[in-house]
Amino acid sequence: MINLNKLVILLDNGHSRLTLGKCSPDKSFYEYEFNRDIVDRVSMALKLNNIPYHIITPEVDPDISLTERANRINRYCAQYGPENCLMISVHANAAGNGNWMNARGWSVYTTKGLTNSDKYADIFFEEAKLLLPKYNMTVRDSHLPYTHSWEENFTIIYKSRCPAILTENLFYDNKQDLEFLKSNQGRAIISQIHINAIKKASSI
Image: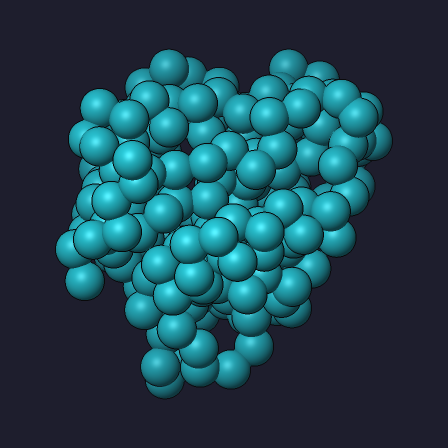
C-alpha cells in the first residue's frame, strides 16, 4: 500500500547499453551501467526506509526514448497526483567527444525558471556539498539568485508533470572524477547523496 504521506519517488536511469558514445575515453566506464547501479542502490535503500518508489526504465536494452520515459512518469503522476511525485533522472557527465577533458564536478539540473523542482534540486545540492568535498570531489553551483541548480529544458524533466530533477554525477571523461565513479566507495557516496536528499525531500 502506497503511503501518500511520503513522496512517490520515480527513478530514471539514463541511457542503455546501446546508446552510442556514453563511455570514458579508455572504455573502462559505461554510463548506462553506472546509472543503473546507482538507481539499484538507491531503490534498495528506499525499500528499507519504506519510501515508495518506481524504477521508470528497468530495461537495459533497447534505449527507451526520452518521450516514452516522460510518458511513463506521467502515468504515475496520473495515478498518484503530480504533487505527490518526484522524478530523479540519474546520469554522469562528459565535457568532450571521446577525449580526456579538464571539466569536473557534480551538478543538478532543472528546467528553466523558478519551479517547484528547484526546492528539491537545492536539497540534493546541499547533500552533495556536504559529502563530496571530503573526497576531493567538486560540486558545481549555478549561482542563480533562486537556486543552485543548472537549468536546461531536457526532455525528461521538461515533459514530466511532477517536480523533476536530473543529477550529473561527476565527469567520466575527467581522470580524477572517473576513478571515483568506478570505485565502490565513490558509488556508495553518490548513492548516499541521493538517499539523504530523498529522505529530506519526503519530509517537506
